[in-house]
Image 1 (cartoon, rainbow, N blue to C red):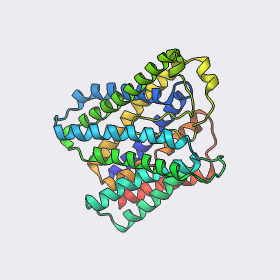
Image 2: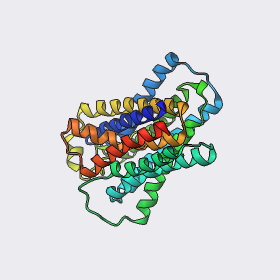
Image 3: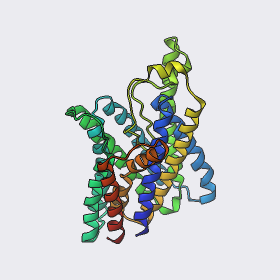
Length: 320
């Protein structure tokens, strides 16, 4: 079905947004990069809304707002769990849960039915999500229970975001996404404002507050993040200031993430939630491919296996 191909393309766009957000977070504080991305995505979606059309509906708007809240929850849980680690386990766990939650909803609640090939494709997709989301080079460390719970919670929040968007009617166009991004922009903007106010009371400049610090995670408003390139010590960066390119990277990240949301919305309205969510959860594939092309990074063997399985799953789900 075309929805499978569209969803797989959307996953690649999501991955590119994660990659850009990760680059922005090398200079900007993670939540600041997310807030800028939310604002730029809102501008894009608001500009496209009159062109693409759509009927305003209070119920659809409510679903859009709820999805924005879920995105903000996913971001908060991501920040918290990655401070605990290890990312090599928590990253795939988040991605897998983000696929399983809407898959289960689609199959059990919505009553979606697939052929034997389709169900097999879902299984292959879950394996692909684990392999693609694997972070090579990290030492194997037994994760803390709290980290596992937070990672699973982040995945559930991302999955809930997809489920909420799927509840909107086709006549609403992209208006639910506009409300989603507006809600997320308000939440992240308020957080940044509170950080600036707290920093001012402590005698810190705006640059010191907004600059990267702690773990670099360029999370998108959807709740995804470039986990593979997240690193720790950013104290020197905070003192060096914020390069203008960081703001542009965060803004373009938001444009890419909003575009991915629109692609996912089209796929959801053309196909099944279970299929679209399984393929969309392969968003780390876009990150590792872009990192290989732009940063000349080597794609690990296990990630190559994940990419191959992702394509196989896409084919199986398209025909199933």
